[in-house]
Image 1 (cartoon, rainbow, N blue to C red):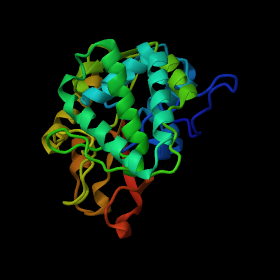
Image 2 (image 1 turned 180 degrees about the vertical axis):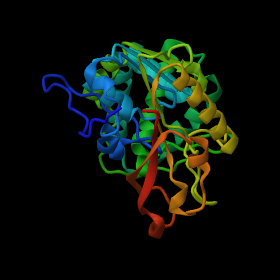
Image 3 (image 1 turned 120 degrees about the vertical axis):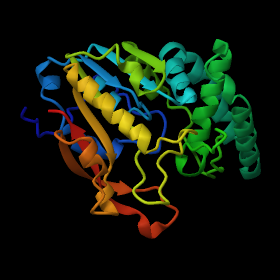
Length: 315
């Protein structure tokens, strides 16, 4: 099928366009124009009326699809409990969340540097103490937990969500002068975008019953490390190793057999090893495109810079 070689269209100007409410490792904001060039034509033609994104993360692609096309049904899921809770809370209780974030923002901006630092680490401790309960909370406690998540994301170093092997959020304080903690306009836009979405906690196979021949599925799993020291899995405490990548490839084939249009993102092993054919072997027979990206997360500044990533599609 011929591809539409044009960028993502924009939302109608009379309506605020939803965008990610969290900064997320591996977010696809910088790649949206290139992803837009490789979307299936069924989105423009209207034959693809359903959209699934099993690794929702920050949701950059989801929001662009919701803003730009006549898709009527959405399915999003993730294995990060707090992320799923955030989407559910914004969908169902956005005004309560905005009220709580506005209170936090006013308090935080009124503190001096030492006070801000103490508030940040107290909030981080409270957030970590409640991590095992995030999908079984009372509504007011759900809102409080999501407010803490957004606050930490907006005020931590580099705005990066990262957890250790125990699942504790461990990013230090960011010391920003005037961080925007509550973006009420965007949160309301996000809430509108989520009204036709099923939001589920689960691994990538959770979308199986939703997907059919009218569905476009975008899969953005934790990236396979391109070197021994690289780590793209720090937003989830469980490893997503080669065996999980292989299980995902098997599921990709299954969804393709169901008639769905599929696109998958992952790292390009050829950045470090030209002989590494891991993804070429797993996805033999599918279209594999290389797109330009920027490596932004690396403790060694010399190793940040342009790289290529893979977009794998079945059309």
